[in-house]
Image (cartoon, rainbow, N blue to C red):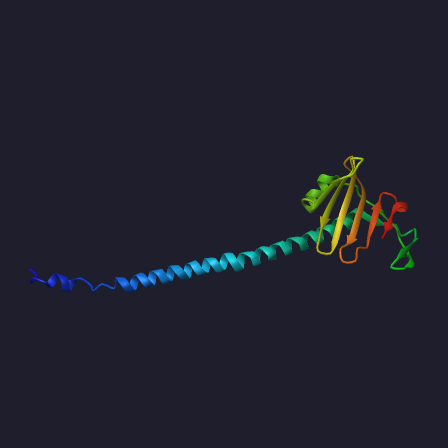
Length: 166
């Protein structure tokens, strides 16, 4: 048997006040970590991923243009370029693809317009270039590649005689 009052000596002394402040401080540090994550890191990561996606799209734009266009080295055409007349080899479309094939290669276009004759124009923007594919009845008839920094570009058609740099 225990003597009276010894039961209280077996109980630990209460540090309830100190422990509650520690718990509150730990919870505040966790909350601060979540705020930093949501306000700083996630927007930075989203911008980084978006920039990477645009760079990949730029590579796809250049690859699609290179695959779809062929330069005719047997002909030379005089064209005005930056205030001078220069000789260039004209280009023509090598392959003709549908709007669905273009979208499967480049993804959804940034802009879609339909002209008065029902022609569909799809535009994709990259970091340095803008590509516009023009379709008539679902068939590609013109591919335009434009440098976004200078505004210069080229219109490529099925015939080398319709080729036009600007």
